[in-house]
Image 1 (cartoon, rainbow, N blue to C red):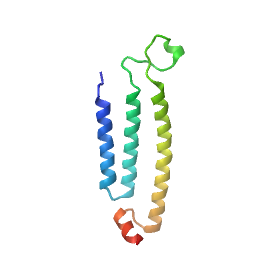
Image 2 (image 1 turned 90 degrees about the horizontal axis):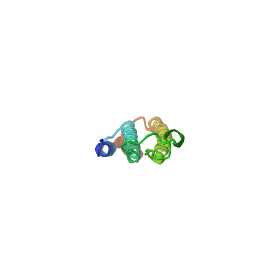
Image 3 (image 1 turned 90 degrees about the vertical axis):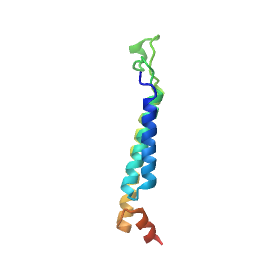
Image 4 (image 1 turned 45 degrees about the vertical axis):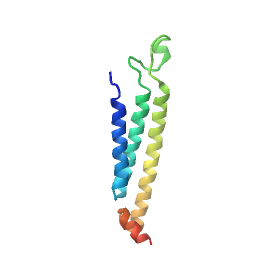
Length: 115
């Protein structure tokens, strides 16, 4: 029913995030682009675990003969969300330190002031 649409969306999100990382000069926008890439990875993991006609992966509710979605990608996605949250918090704290030290968030300006 849904076909390959989630995988195309994952590709578009990943390319948009990667393009923003290489094209943007503001550190906050780069952090947002990294968040977009992590969302694309999470969507990819959820799309991998999808099964057409599958039910909730709880055995005592579904029965033994019922087709269920895969629970492993769901657990991996929850773990990836927590890791992404911690990484984003750490990245934003580093950006705050860079702003306090250099007074700017522009990557080119920081490179110029460094030397």
